Length: 204
Image 1 (spheres, rainbow, N blue to C red):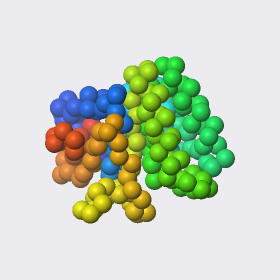
Image 2 (image 1 turned 30 degrees about the vertical axis):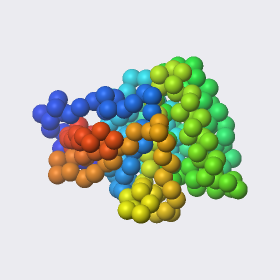
Image 3 (image 1 turned 45 degrees about the vertical axis):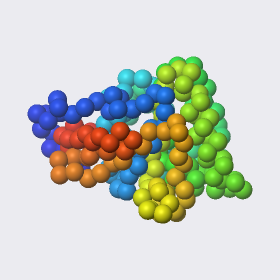
Image 4 (image 1 turned 180 degrees about the vertical axis):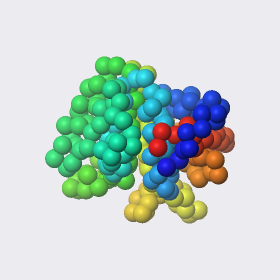
């Protein structure tokens, strides 16, 4: 999808763990799901810690099922439904409180859909995010929350296509994924910096 397997460019591509924060929520924003899939596939391939991946849009799971990506030994892949979401979150909270892990919520849009039965779904989503953020500090773990979003001048970042307000806290780091001629441009919005993930370094 992204690569031609030219190893020359891989050495110059930065490690994503170096741009992630262990003290903040890493909010990954994107307009194209394939950019998100490319970013996360590279992140997972680099990570040696246990990865707890909550796959709510099933795109990553589809790549594994089709054989495009390999299910790594340190990756636990969750595909929660309305009936299992509470059990999944409980298991993740327990594991994250005991050892250093990487938690990936993919995506916040999907979490809204799964929790749609809640009368105050917005408050439920915010509570879950804040609880996860609190637990990771104890074990120096990291959390990545992916959100399909767009920027509106009057409202700031909103989820796409629902228009729900994007969850912003003082304890978050915003990372915008953009198309580039040679790969994925990772725009660090809070730091005003950009890096390139070369197409040849992305596992997809």
